[in-house]
Length: 285
Image (tube, rainbow, N blue to C red; front, side):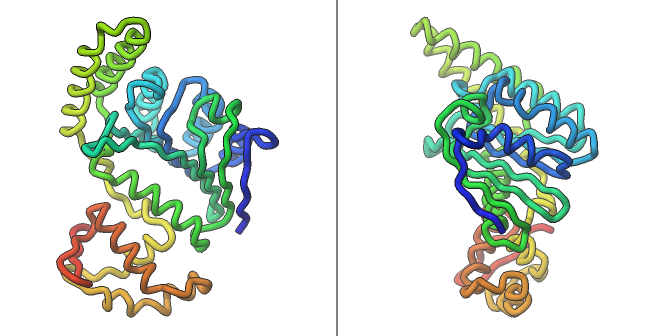
């Protein structure tokens, strides 16, 4: 496994992403903000992945400010044109006013995986111009940092606030974006903006969440999921596979704690329910 810190001085992220996407079989982007000029930097590589039958996913925030409606429209059209392309969206703000704000780029070549996590949004500034710092991880699913990165991505994707957009949501977001643009020169449109944010949020509540797939569960998350018994089970039922897990991750000195962490993540994804101290129930395969 290779881990290093990168910045836009010596290694602009657009170049690293383009290299990583060359002949890739899968790419997953979870970013707070996306722009058309940012997409343009990686569009050709993404299209090649899709045309070769690879899977590409984008999770973006409909914040009404930094995420351009034109970029969202392009991603939505991509998801409509290619069966293996997916777009998922977060609302402007969650119930706790928490902002969806990650910057994750995950790419797979066969068993090799490249993970880039840091400060760069999917914008021209974030990928090529700003003073940004990111961590580059190169390895495979048996490397714990890689496994943890994919686990974090799966948690974001299967959060209850994350939805698959429809035509109406894209139209609503274009209206919100236009209103936000106009507000930069006119405060009189603030009321309209609030109404659009509310309408967008209400519409998103009725949209489907991303479908759970086994391919979302990489590394630790997938290993724990695969041994879960049907119905009710306990931590000890899963601890029985500790030796098997240790063979995959020999440097982990606290396997039981790692198992409990994965069960909590599976709970957050709606795969299992917590039914009491050390007790769980499998909800769905």
